[in-house]
Image (cartoon, rainbow, N blue to C red; front, side, top):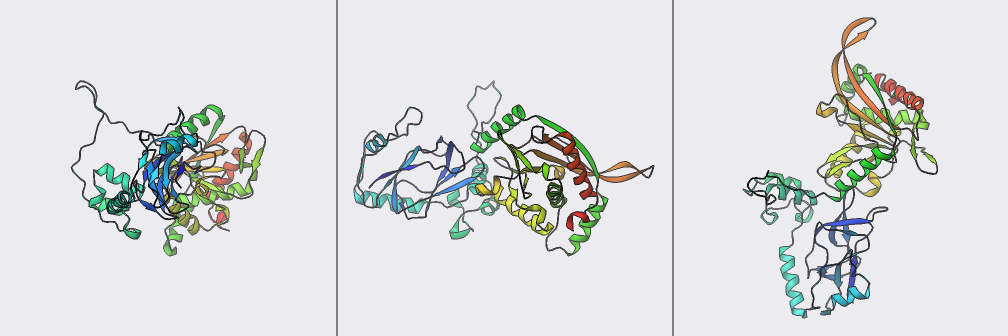
Length: 407
């Protein structure tokens, strides 16, 4: 018996989501567990898996269109079903509404079994398996995915396949405009980009930020890093040390390891540190769990693995939700100093600049030293200035005496 396929609640408290890509076509057979579509959430892409064997009879929502959670997005036929009145099915379910009316044919779908089988054969021959990142890269390069050979699992086209292919001589489609007007392209906002914009505006408008700046001498840490990397199985970055130092400082100053709620201050018993990662769709903050108790090598592996899957849009919700503190590091881009906006409900975010050689005073004499500048943005509702200064002093001490965070 035919049934409606509804937009699931793919992340906690989500009210809307968008179909990024249908992996099947109308008429395709579906087995339980098959991926039917990829849904774009606020932070990542989530696969919509079939719960039972069926046939994808009708697609009601085109890729890129945002709909409410629970809205019908497709119709599933039972295998062998040949007579389905989709309009009646939608009306019976109360799905036709002014706010979210699906696009359906005026006439019911009446497909003989032979036609369904033929459609299935055609659709299977044309189906293209590719990761969302590969699809975006191919579109940017003007490549036809059917011309590429996938090297991923089961022949799936992945990022490296697109990067290895020569770019097609395809012109970008720009917005039509008079000859005298300025030429431009319009890139529609993704769900993730819109969510980031909304949350940043809310943060700056509702969270009382205050800022503390600090300079750290980095010679001891740089020397220790060089020593560690001589024998380490993987190279440890300055950012890995910073993640560790933040986590240990949160453990030593537990009053800083909090988030704000309207009814209570929530204090955490473990140091879960979020690390800001830039992706094509915007900024995302995967969480390094229990960072205070992890070795530098494990922190390095966790950050690299989470950042890679964040850029591919493959993080699970539990991997970017939670934590109490965020690190935003722009030092690798040569930025000397900046201030970051707090990521609610976190109480603070640390903006990290580049380590630079600067004139410093040491023992009353002018010399050259390696200096790292940090700016701590703090939610004044959850943390007072004296407490933030205490935490920052502990953090500075750990960076300048890095062996202390490893013991």
